Length: 306
Length: 284
Ligand code: SF4
Ligand code: SF4
View 1 (tube, rainbow over the protein chains, first blue to last red):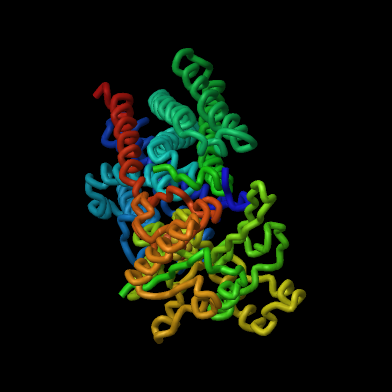
View 2: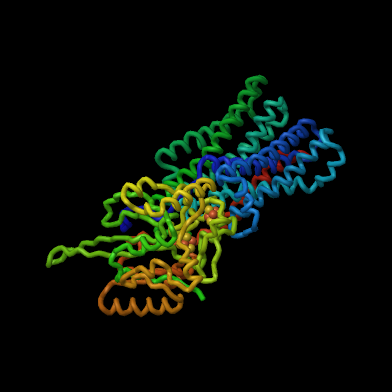
């Protein structure tokens, strides 16, 4: 096998924990958009409470994501450079516009709740038409998915090999993390009635996620080695696959099957959702870190995945 | 009129005049001094601050007359792709195609996001995150002349959080009718600069002549390289396989994967929304 002194052919990503956090929160914002839609316009007080929680949280996350991106870019003005143009060919450009529009929709929906609660004048309710709820959900689906497209539409062999899988499991992981966050907040608020539904949604999302990750490993070929082997592979196995999917799934299944005393059940929910959130973060982190290793291997980069 | 480079490995003598001329003209800082042990190549790679890099390949062949060693050198550079991954990826529009058909990074628009870096199928463009090695330069007596300028740049780059850097095909020189610095400095015309169509014809004639003489020569990038990238505005004549020069055999334009990615994401989102609807609203 020929190479040039085994020197890397490609340049790896210069992305650290701030970009990982940006991608992770983007996924959660996406999932919260869905939960906000699912709990919309329901008479039950518990659902109402859940709806408010997801809307306030989504807006809070939308507000902190730009500063996180700016911490990566270096200076606040640099964020504005992205708003010079809309570029359909660039997932990074579309993603920033997705974030801006999502913030608008999430802001409108948060405002609607604030007006209902009487925190702000009722008249402001009219600034948020009913359509902003499904719009936030649609933009949310985009937010959770584009991060996967963003990394797989690059030259990094590991990411390129996952052009179908990475976007798919990014969406699932975002939905699972969002359900986990909503579960966590609802448990802390004592809003127990919504937990069974949230936990079932989380189980469905995690099941799809683990299936997509397993299929990626099976079909991705040589290029997937940096993600599934070595130190990163071990971390992914422990924190995402086991700790972030299998264990919370089991805990949620137990919660659905047997009636536990209230305090123990609350502990179970808190443990399951915290583990899911950690697993979601580690998944994004492993993808970025394994991307750096993947760029260093010239042999997989000589013939790039189609 | 599109212009470009034709770089011919059979004419390169490995003098690195192109590397030096490029660094000087573009006022690029030293990258420090690293002894690699890889033949005479201590530059190693193209980077944000190295826009020409000379590959040194040492080959041995054994036959009845004994062992013969042969060299192949090639000056690598940004390919100024017809469909450029870096340009498509850039979210700010900092990377543009200029009037000479070259791919150009506008440093004042670039925000240092680094997306172009992972989107180049040839591993060319990189972020200049820290300009430094001023002390190194002084230690080895290199580039001390430009120390003031170096410090200026160092402050600018650090204050901005990095910008992307790569070959400009000497945009500034071309605008005033000058030949790019590397082509001007090359003593053997291994680097030829000119109008693309004319260079291609010259390259095809050259490779034919060489093949007639029994040299194993091939062109890289004069025609479509595949993967959606198209022909390269900076193309090469090689005497070994592309991998030997750290060039990809099958490069792919990253954006060609987007449609599939969005479709997969949409399918996952739709599935989850349906399941979610059944869980939350199935009873309503
Ligand atoms: S070789 Fe890389 S940096 Fe140069 S134009 Fe092509 S994609 Fe851009
Ligand atoms: S680093 Fe600069 S040139 Fe590269 S993609 Fe980002 S904004 Fe564009």
